[in-house]
Image (cartoon, rainbow, N blue to C red; front, side, top):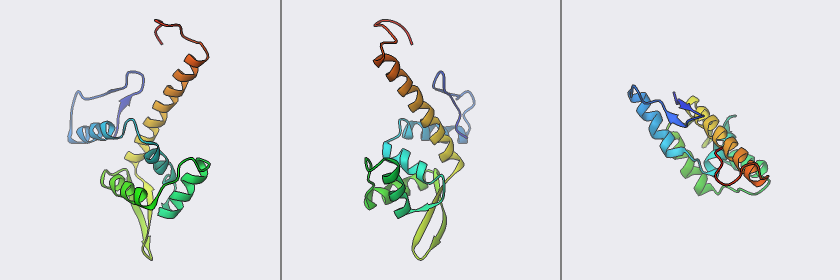
Length: 135
């Protein structure tokens, strides 16, 4: 299970079990997360095959992100290898992917990180903090 204190952004590593070390490795590898990874994980919160993932991401981002087949299949292989997604069915050569619990937790952590990033950006752009002030 991934555990991270969102206020301090510290990973609890007082007792490093094998599971904790694996979670720490995933956090280091996927945070910050690329947009393509983020949107792919969002896409597989419901089971989807490759082409459906590509369509979902294209529609959700209004064409801003278009996943190519090479990018998608390389990424799904890596996400599967890291335990963030799994194949939930395979019929007629079509693999249908779904997010795992670890993938969902990582996606939630990244969404929280992005929320804070956006909040900070909007605050500064609206003139909320002066130079030298602490957030």
